[in-house]
Length: 127
Image (tube, rainbow, N blue to C red; front, side, top):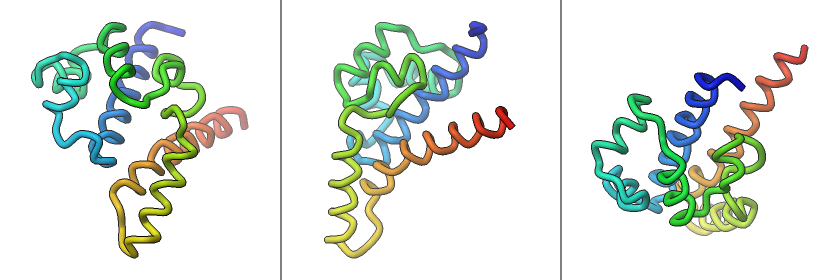
């Protein structure tokens, strides 16, 4: 895999993780993302915009402090979250009980939507 492609994919996955963490209300700000990674807000902002590439140490700390699947983060294969099925079930239940839209339910579904989008693109390439 060419290095430029790998860097853009890692950045894309980092952005996806941040979106998930924010929408699921696991964190409330980019500053909190930085705390999970032991990085200042400025570094997180540069990572999100692609001005910097996330390091293995930053990935390691993020994975240790969240339920993000390390294999998915590095390779893009598999599910974004460890125990993702349980998360989706819990969010679906919370959505049903509350009777309205739940940001946690939406956040739980985002990784599944992303996986489907990637598979659709792969099928398009194959055809």
